[in-house]
Image 1 (tube, helix red, strand yellow):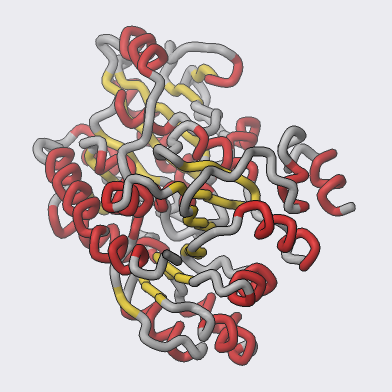
Image 2 (cartoon, rainbow, N blue to C red):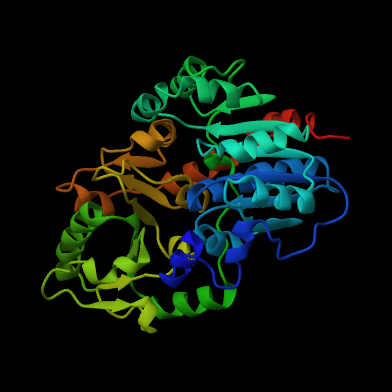
Length: 390
């Protein structure tokens, strides 16, 4: 009943919503299968580097990635690694989980970040499927919410053969909740391959912006948009060649984007091209296009309570990264990029100067750091492969 209501509101995929009842829509591949789960777009996309490293070590493996958000499936479909399938995670109830596990019969179950579904974890453990938690992230607020349920979390964590945290703070929180032997392996987001982009679409867009000076504000929320649009108003009035590609984190917020008076805007979802001062890229899964058109990107979530989004996606494509002061969700990632010279913190008042300033070398440094992250995931991949049922 809940899923049908969500379907009516457009929150579920009409062709695939029954996957959440454990009904597979594709056949299981032959051979050993590794099942990885993450909840949303960022978490799912971060798994790609780990999948690539495991596949390189053992090319005969197949991979199943599950998630819960419809948007994550849509974006992941455009960046699908080889020998990898996607399904939605079933509702956390025995009849649906049994149907799912009977069909897929995974040889290893890998959970990412902090989205653990107790029923699914216990069901996998009862079938002696090895369990691993990777890329774990838990800030002080998340830990405080979980502390009263320590007994439940301790029971779940004890079922995992490997637990790998992004940072020491997360490792301490997991240990306090009953986890043992927690490793600190850093963020998987730095290890992810570059975002894909449609070659034909990219060529057309490059032709459309010839002679323009392009910058991107990506994964934005209202606070970030206010800063970026104010800066673009200054830039465009000084030089109409400037073009801001604005990519809201939630594309359906198009009507909420408050463009300053006199600043012409065109909209991607309406079939319009980037002919004005602002191009509202209100589509899903096209960040690979927008980053390839720009030399500098302002990353959203960094001027408001969201506390940041992934800076590695533009860095891996050689784009200089700018961000606001609020990056708690990616503190180590931004610290690494800032210290290396690939990213720079800015104030609203200093954004125009940063966009027009000396960005030379920042993109190349970001690419080098991302490539180092991709190489660094191999030890974790090897540790996970050692758990796969033979």
